[in-house]
Length: 175
Image (tube, rainbow, N blue to C red; front, side):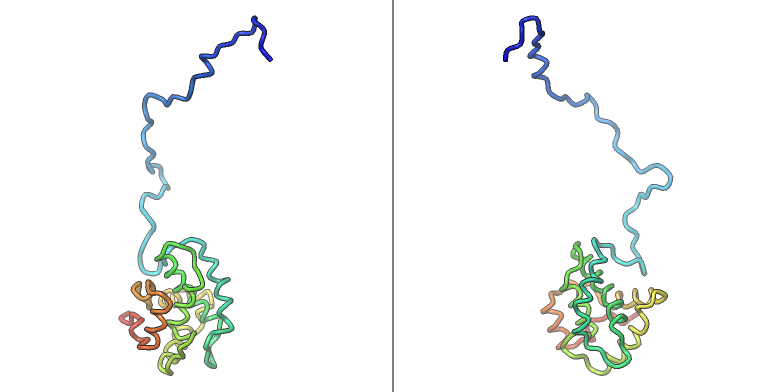
């Protein structure tokens, strides 16, 4: 329906579009007290940050029935120790944890086949004893640091082959 003649019809105003301001404001700087200027802190005992890390605990429940435990070992300790290793692996790839991360972690320490030799079982019994208790955070971090990045970047089949060949080469024991 057409507008009556006495209604102003300014079509030039309708053709206008947004025009940015003539100058750009100064860039934002973290110059106020309390703002963090550096990146993520790195160092011993600080861990490796990654996305959605809590999901690893849910994934770990799937492996509990398959774990090769000897008398005196507890599934809760195995999960608590290996979840940290799985999270480190996932963070290296810049993603949330997946089942393969937990598989690698459990397999490296001999909780999944191939069955470990008795010397590894005795060693891991000492390492994993009580790790599920919150007061043993430092021990859990030491477990994570035992597995080097080169091992964590391998595929699950490569780790399985390395475990069958010589598991001792999968650890950094100079600590």
